[in-house]
Image (tube, rainbow, N blue to C red):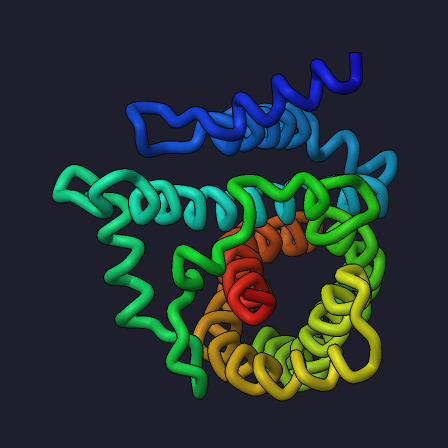
Length: 251
């Protein structure tokens, strides 16, 4: 029974909608989005009764969405590159992703955001989405700390909260995140140091181009109970970027 299920999953993992969009990624993203919609429909009730658990589940789902989207981007480009005859004019989405790679290389490394085709990971990596591992687990684990941090910032002036957040929590959180990813991949102290040297400052620099503006809007406009979900929603794109960059360094 297990082997049949594995064969079925592997079969779906090689199928594409219109020959370009990965079917399995689409299914999983649809499940995430449906679950998220259900959660949002009663968010106020869940937040009032169990605020911390609500934030943990919300963060976990949003991180799952981000990592699945990152894997979908990789899969689309991989499919186009590896098909007989290579990339054609019909592969417009893969070409756009490739052009984005060239315009936005990883700082200092001149590497593409998505690695060359021969270094690409498998079409879908289930290990990264299993509960208590990788990105979903990170969202689940970090939610209490983020929740307490936002509560600590309280009702201070928005600019002061942004400064504290970006100069205090952001550098700490990024270092913790990169260390966490390395450890969950089986790396030790040397691997953590190498990843930090490769990604920490370039990624922190990139984050300062996005997050201060996001957090100003967040702290000025968004009600307290929605500040973490709002940041996590914007974080879908950020986590997608991080997922791609960390995959690139592993390749």
